[in-house]
Length: 611
Image (cartoon, rainbow, N blue to C red; front, top):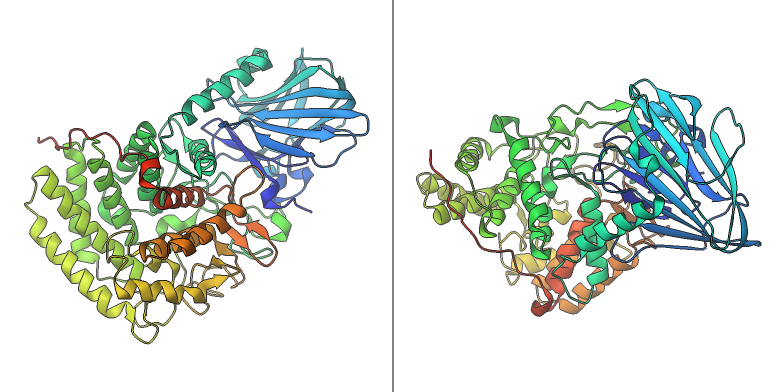
């Protein structure tokens, strides 16, 4: 039986991440990158698919756990009949090769401990060849080698299918276990195995606290905001600045269902909101790195714009299935890679243009080639914005005239006009202004349902969609507009237990159309959009209540998955989800008193260079 999704905590070295359960087991780890094949995959199967458990021999879950303040260093404490022990888990920020340090400390009495490492390379499938080399154990399979070392005395139990070490800690005694990955061609143990554990812990704590101290937000929800920002940083691939949607794949939105997707990639949908919350919170360098990744990823024909890219901007992300993995609680298939690269989504053009506009307003310079990109993208949109697409949720079935997609084409034209005005480049603005006006008229005419007094998911269909809650946020209509107020009222039909679903039953993406059987949970981001829209329409108290409901469903270390099931009271979907944490930061900033909010970033040069 798989552990609940909310039982997992995240550790990361800013290039990959591990998921650590309350039982002391690392059940998910991909090396050396977020999107590399998993070598520990019990999260999607059983212990035979790979795990690394460090816990008392007596077993059980830890009595309590928490991240050290403003860090991604995790402390888990067990209280046994013979004593108390703490395990500290961390991944030092990458300085060569990826590694996990697990520091075991005796707090009282005497506790017998066990480290059980079952490595299974190539997505939890391949049992490696294991050998002893001096003070280390090395496991090799194909191109991968994982080294395991201890800085104290352990006893090898000789399990043929795992590396099992037993040891005992008493009050005041410490012993550290370090796991590091290298290419298998490397003949010697990597440096991290020789670094003192106290040094690794101190340097990692110092790194995260220095980073968290940059946060400018001082409002009433600072703890939740900082934890969300740390999570976003943890999901950032440092070499390029790309932010993965989640570090996991195939955690289901419906237990036992087939809607299980790989989120270890970078979605353009996240771009504007990620940039916004980073800039508003004081993280200009991270925002600039994310923008740079975006511009590099978009290079090429605007007709080939994808909704998702790899962490280095890769375009080919072939989707495969892993039939040898039974899936989380039997939710199959387990997927690696994504077919979403082939979809046609108009909304991503609006997200890109909004991101560029926001960065320009924040004073991040726009080089000439980026303005060329703006003109190229807008030229494509002028020719194709009237076409149907697959919408924000990338649903299956025939393409439709999605209201949100049209709203975002309006955003694209509006931001392009504004950038042109700011940069003194108005040569194409006439056509963009005309497009902006035409799109606005069309959405207000075709996307509005007078019978429901609400904007609908797609033209000519009655189904509602939570994306309509974004209309005031993007500036399409103000919160005081009666059409916005009516839409917010109508969203009550999408609620379940005080949380908001993506869309109504019977809308696009319902049973049989995108692998979802209609029983998926409510979406954390949609519930936060609802809080934002309530505030925009003057219902502040209701907005605060909606926001507090979301804060209450974070797990014990402050993490959010993609979805929440109010009926079972559990998290669903891939976790932790960047989009959920981005939305949390945005909502906290929007609901906080003005004095506690950060500035929008330093103003600087905004002129685009000319060739």
